[in-house]
Image (cartoon, rainbow, N blue to C red; front, side, top):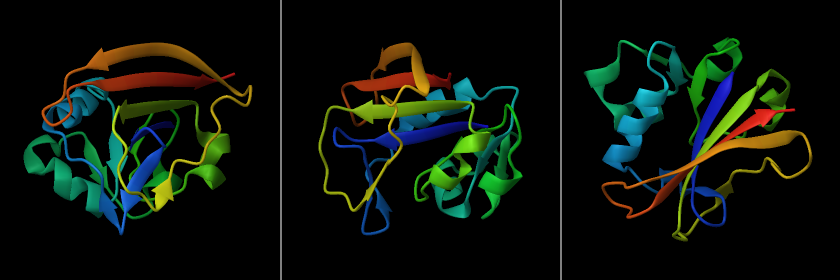
Length: 138
């Protein structure tokens, strides 16, 4: 599976069960990255995406167990550590801001198991600069 996460400068993902950002252009880029594939997420995340892209989105509370090789999984409020053996790629969107957080992305991408293969900067609707990094498992 290919995991997509959004984090701040300190790898924060959520604060008091609320996402840190709902950037519209970031969501559009996620959908663009997943064209032609399935995009799994839970109901919480689907509420942000809305119904306009439901043709590629599969909503399930157990999506990390259901997704297969090559499927995308948008993760906001879950730790993916126990699913790492099934993850081939991680796409991280991050912005150059620091927000309060109590849930963090805990995967160490500098541990030698992952290789940065692509990095691009985007302009968001609520963030002037968003960086997309793509890591592949070695």
